[in-house]
Length: 295
Image (cartoon, rainbow, N blue to C red; front, side, top):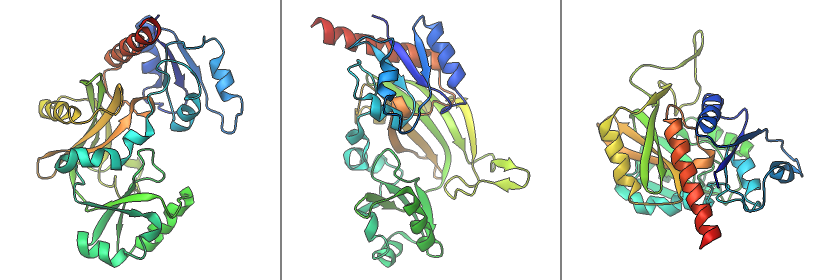
């Protein structure tokens, strides 16, 4: 049984065509589909052409992936949400985290604890949701924009009881995304660089995202051996799924640190080796299917 891939279109547009070519090159079947919100027959449409318990690997958005967990495909979607919550992996990585100095609290308590947070962390804070699936985008705040920024997050329908992480701010030089399959770091890609100046979105215009300000998005296979070695080291500390990703940073102090982890099925791949990823993920999926159906 060869793995069959289902790829959502118009999401990861920078690698979409290359990934589809890599799947076909491997001799495996690939189908594409567009996610339609509020489509009650989405799972039914996706299931057309597949058998029950087929060996299928999904790659696309979180919303699409969540719905497809209803199928009986093996493995289907690499998406174990609980394992990607900060509360699950922060205690494991500890000092290896870029934001190892952190406090967790309900979103609705941020205003009340505002003075305490600035006294503890300094004049700038980094705030992100505990969930690995971004109820809102991690953001930088200071005393002057705190109220407006927290209010802006409400546009994501953030509930007061949502657990958030508050930490101090760190300066990065570079960021990489590594792909891990069966405990092996199989590929890595540089995806953001602060050493080559800001990204110009249009003449005279830079991003307004304070987290990304003065950095540039890139798409290059990782050539930093030390970053690879560090990824291999921390990937042995935690295993949320058969296939997953880990983001690594080089800080301004020339230290390698862990930013966050993510599920493979819903992660951008940037300049990673797509041929190798397709082969390794497919082989893992096929072995899982054999184990489920034979033993």
